[in-house]
Length: 178
Image (cartoon, rainbow, N blue to C red; front, top):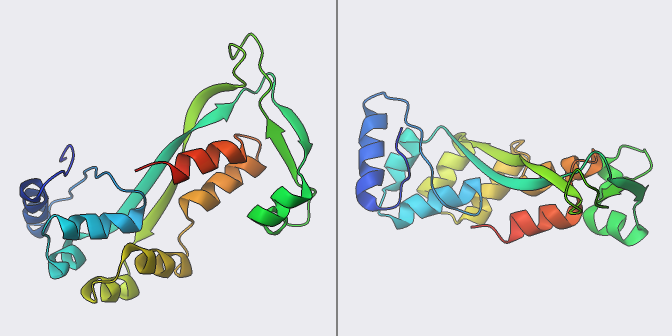
């Protein structure tokens, strides 16, 4: 375990341990899983080392959970359905969204506790090729999504449709993190 990779020296120690066959787990502050590649590159890590040692990158955000005692369900506005393509995710079911209300159990906030939304980028040949081409994180992310990765935002939308949180909470968490 490497607590956090913040600089070149720590990144080199983690890389050397991985090259020796050790499983290395660490944290790194980025906006997405794909951005971890460019962040490590910015710390001076060579592309061939990144491709050699990275196996998977997990990005996560904590979002507030709606209070189960007082949340209120309502049909989603057509504009919201269209903007976030919720009809495609709802698989033909009516799109109903939960909203915070506030009660004694949640101290009138409408939320009680938090849970994680996440994306997991698994390196494959295409992503390794992009690393060697020094592609930006956007290109790496698009390749990961094309390869089946569910993005943080998509994971959040699934949580919205299941009534666990709100679209506003997902947008706030995903687009203001970093």
